[in-house]
Length: 141
Ligand code: HEM
Image (cartoon, rainbow, N blue to C red):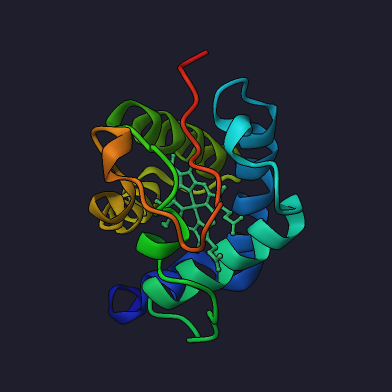
């Protein structure tokens, strides 16, 4: 029965994750505030890392070999407001990829499990992974 399948399988596997992440990062890179955080890594690399990470989280292949979300974002002041903005863009991207509302909700729920690992209240909660790593804190715009 379809309901026994993993979220990854019910979404249609890797091609669906790749499609959504392409649409999502197009939006993130075009957004005046969110794009400020994305200066170091090429969009395609981020898309692939996000696809591998979410694949694992949704019960698909375990191929993600990057940092944990907590350490990858330790130097970024990701406020609650910024996280919610990202969630909205992700939701829009999932919808634009033609995925039904039930699966979209499940995807957003899985994504939301990482909220506590990345969100901070103040810059004092940011830490550097190595000396001189810039702290990323951009006012809303
Ligand atoms: C507003 C919220 C977020 C912002 C601004 C953000 C921004 C970024 C940036 C700039 C990078 C590249 C870091 C680098 O240069 O190495 C990155 C990496 C990454 N992000 Fe996020 N992110 C956010 C939320 C999330 C969430 C909720 C997840 C998980 C569902 C996530 C998963 C990842 C992963 C897997 C990587 C790759 C880590 C690595 O191997 O280096 N991000 N993110």
